[in-house]
Length: 573
Image 1 (tube, rainbow, N blue to C red):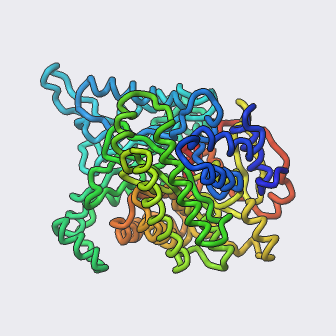
Image 2: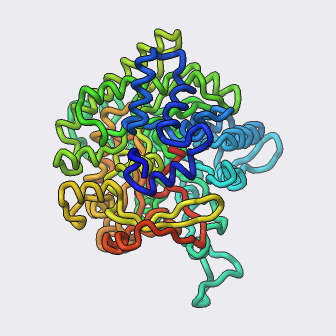
């Protein structure tokens, strides 16, 4: 195994997904990528050092950067942020065109549909009635189904709707497949089958919005209703650290919490104070914007491979400047995206390996003072270094610098914890695509394995997403504490126990609603994933000893993987 890869599965992902004639090794890919992006824009010394950092996996560019390195087309951007701009038939058609254009480059898309009038509203010019935004979401979903990116990579799509929209309750249950029955279909026991049952049997079975993640948009009106105060008073008191009392919790929000706890969706998109108009998100929700046809530009620093804060500062400097150069060379699917990019030059430098970094230093899963010091460097250096190079190259300064992606794929390549997520599980079964066949392996988590070996840890005592599922507030607080240093958003999924069990049931909905509200003003969004809520989930926990016995063997899967978005997301990174 190549020395840069900690795990066999990391090396296999590289070989199956990113390796090509100009990148036979990770070192060659790193050199080719840096040449493509920064040549002539950074000094030779900085270019050499950046190549070393990428080769050592201290910084890893987003998945589209890796895939297109050395290829004729340079579609380096992961995903595109779209807005339904007008409530007209012309805009309906244009949204389909924008979506298909973006998806065909390998990027994901996210769309806010709130401008479209509610279903049943009169259409004065034709005498008809409006169908509402949900049918349009379904149309985009079907475009994504047919545009299998690269012939194999499933489309990544996101849809959102304002909490006060007339169709919001229909939206809340738009993916309640367990409540949708299919005529003529029956279970093995002879009962009428739901879409959820058929999806569990065959993940290829088409279901409403099955290519799409959905969230509800919450704005300043929501905060004012919750706290029964105007937004300036709320901001002033929260800024002083005062914990305001919840005067009224809207039924829409409570139902959103119930649906998220039971089925995982919709998620929550929080857009408060001066960020109220930033309702647009990419498919994994870490990039935010208010401008239609904005674009992601992602890369992540691997904290687990950086020993000192001085080196961390240097990695931040060169990584953010790499992304700035990417705004010059990356090809885009249509002209408006180019214009918006020139105006915003949005960068998304993220972090991964955060939990491993904590474990290396003997910390639990919390934002300790030492981590705060590193996060402050991350915040300050990303802005100053990007602005310095932008001024030198005569480019507009970025409007945003930091977003933390889920890093599902590149986290596995690096063999570290993904994004800000804790270890998912010490051992798991992982499904993946190889060519056009779906396979699975039993995996002892690479980071877990190395830590268990190095420090003689008990695999049954490590904090993981699954053990922390019994304490969701710890996960939510961690995300809020990191968000204080991030100017866009964080993609993080809070795992929960199976719906109907002691710690996740109807009686706990009110408690969870209040828990989230305690942190909502500090978050940009949040997602839950109750165990077993979607059939075909890509990572399934197994016993450490069982995985260790079968590790290294490859098995053929009978049905298609669900996108890693459901367990934290991949979005190509």
